Length: 385
Image 1 (cartoon, rainbow, N blue to C red):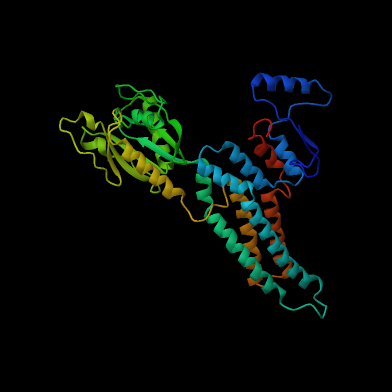
Image 2 (cartoon, rainbow, N blue to C red):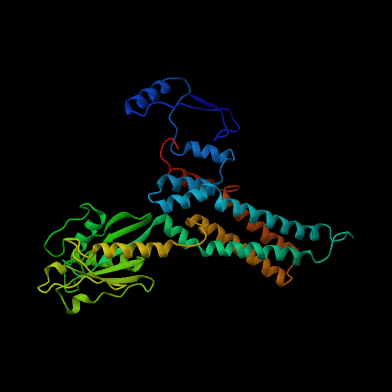
């Protein structure tokens, strides 16, 4: 047993840690014995982390980083989450807070001591100079928000195409398990099937969609096509898969989101009467999902695509929508303060804009007004974290 006296423990309280053998029966017996002692109970999900937050040992961005670290499935996600836990965003937020407090102090000095002879004139321009530096840094952080959120959630890659092209077979081969039902009959897949992959450390969500058969009048099949189009419109990459033996309309893919990259995958080359050399182009891949011919080239291209999507010289500061929204509120308040200063609307209005920005930063790190989000964040943790 290890004893950690507060306030230097992880939660700020007196804390005892039992280190026991890991067998389930041993752990169950120890928990049963502890539960029979007066005042002992099992911790709620996230309770230890919440106590650490309330004791000031972690700010809210670090708590979110810890939640992401617990749930990380790939090395890239682990690195990003660890950066947040170690204060990557929280530390920058504290720097911005100190700058804005300095700027606000200058503005309020001009308001409160305008009749004092030793107080310099025109303090607002000096304050706005500080504000602009903070505003530029926050804007740069927001510019990388999409990259950070994408890494946390993973890339979305949709496999689409006409019925019976072999989409589910490819999904199973990439997943290395029977994730989707495979049948020689067209229209087997009616809904979107989702599989999470780790491509050399990069998180990928692979989606198998219903086949496109515009002539079908089956309402279930048409609903499957509608969902497939919706998934394709939101995907980062679409693998449009066709039967290598088919020509004509089956090769035409429906309109997609301009943001989505599109690759052509010609499947079933093992069934061609005349064998073809497997030579992949940057966006065209002849394969056999059944035998695996050409699939290695496709996987290598997917790894490169993921690497290019996530690769950046600097880690992303913003990794969650909540963080992006809060920083957006801070930016809006700073723009308002700068506008009021440029229009010479009054030092009081400039000061009010800076106060709103400071409140926004406080909400980001959990200094003020966060009760409405605490339960949502901490329930992501498992019991005992």
